[in-house]
Image (tube, rainbow, N blue to C red):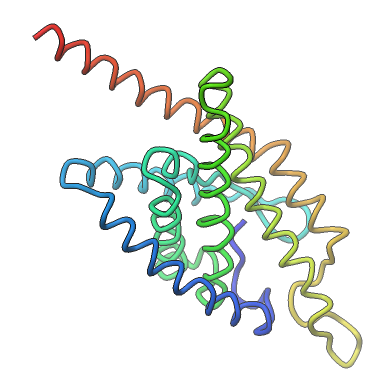
Length: 222
């Protein structure tokens, strides 16, 4: 789902860059406030987990690819601003070091996979928590976050044929319109990648909850 360089017009990525800079500044400040010496290693481990699962890109129809993110786990455990910052940092390192996603379009990748995924997952989890089974809430939060991110990517890519064509009438940037990107990208994330993200979110949160309960039991016994 990483957008590479050359797929977006300057009309798209320049405003996105202007918009994401203050958001990243706020996210950095929120992250510094939220993280303690004790939680830093835990957060780093979960960020590394997101880094790894995002490197497994699977090609899908429509000229792009899909993968899990891990944004919901970070957002639910540490808050959406922290989740957005950690995912954005991961995306920046992947673009800079591995060429996975473009630097010029980093802002759009950050907005979609960092901010949209984290905030949708966090607030949906907050809305449903306590009303239905925890494992279901975790799954729905993870699934919804990545599907929302895929919708942003699909719309942005699908708009590109309208924003630039050459003398022969061919698109200069991403060549496929919304009629291709929405079913290909959003559809694949609804049916496959979203399910993987939901299951990963459910299993990781359940495992962490189990560890917390075990430690609490040991403390009481002592």
